[in-house]
Image (cartoon, rainbow, N blue to C red; front, side, top):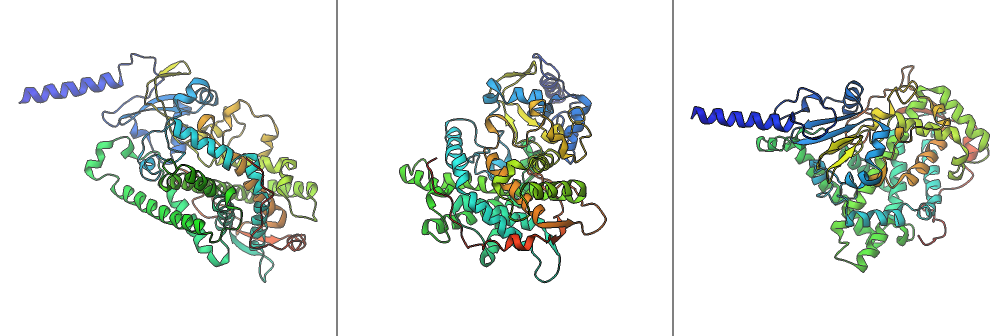
Length: 511
């Protein structure tokens, strides 16, 4: 018996040494020690972005690690990132790893973000590119974005006092929810049903809070036999139930025409229902739901988070806030509200948005990729099934790429950005975010309006707390609360046009 146990132990040790130390191929550099069973998981500490950045700074921009049963490639270099996401390697790394979050929250890997590369994914991306995020489709909602901007500004006006203390997380959340829900289902949430919009914001927040890329259960699957992740799975199933119930009600109301304020045919749900009518088997409700929920949650979380970070940075940097306000006054003037068409003529404001996304990228660690076959990256052999993690937060704050990287300095973007991928707020390659052309005007218009119409102050002499929250999307841990005072021009600007309950889109053009 003792001999058998010794033999088993020798086999286990030999297998571990072969798996982790015998390197028949030219694998990228690794870190020692590699602990049996857990590999390099002992290195993971919170926050993950800083941990990965520190590892890359110490051991190099490309690392091959073992997270339990998974091979993991850590990349923190724009040139290597470009190699992963262009030409042949882009298709090879177009798959997603089978993580718990995606299995449950992404409806068994069926939404666009987590679906593996293939004909179904390609068809979805084609629909999104032509029907949802094309230039023509986005232009059809131009007036709606302007309307929601006016609603936001009027909601910030104090009722009786000269100034107002505002919760910007809620303000920007309402603005983004109404813009996105109009594009998705042609409706908005006003004072009468604001609770439904806030409910969606809560669902979005809770969804991404569960998207922890360092969940041990994804790397040590045998932990499930000991009850590990039981509470996490329970929370994920609960959020799925809330999301599905919320969207089922929205879908039912849409079919009945309740609250739909614009032409159904140009909405995202309307497009899918037309496809469903033509091919019910390919586009059942079970197919539509995860795709639409993914678009809703992504757009709301990322745009509202970017706006909150931007204004927080401006409050901590009054010089930049004043310069952005002066630019708007100079270019737009003081006799009308800034419009989306003005954004291309406001270069400094655009620099503010870019610098915000550099310091606080909405997805700080890009959604993981997985290699579908063996490949070569930076001269190293990468085995099939390797999970690729790109730490764009680390790239955006790398002192070798940026001068004084921790400083909020929008002027840096007045110069040409090189190398190409040292700034990638929307990702890159086949799996990059398809909605950047919608996010830019949505964020830019809202930020321009609040800068044009109000003077902003912190509630005290202390700087705004910039602590980052955890999860898949980078959010402020504490909601941004600030004091806003209408500028002398604001009353005349906001009284120029009334805000109807619905604003029709521009004339429809075929997409």
